[in-house]
Image (cartoon, rainbow, N blue to C red; front, side):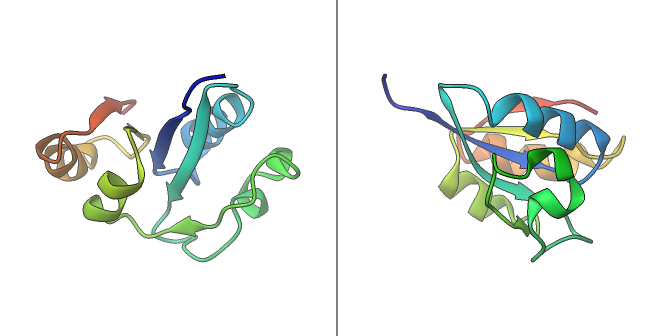
Length: 102
């Protein structure tokens, strides 16, 4: 197997972020590098999404564009409508590929 794509889920504690995590943690070519949540920062991802127990062992972190850009090749934005633009611009300027799901 080749190199895995490092993926960040920005806004990972909501429904869209949870479903995206469910799909990506099982994908053979993807490594979920980080998931962000302002209100859940420091808590295990599986605490917010129990169906991920045994599949993911990371904790939510606060959304920091520089940290997302350093740790990822691709970022999915699963933020509320209107919030994504604040994160998309610095990520795109850092050369990251961005998929906005809002």
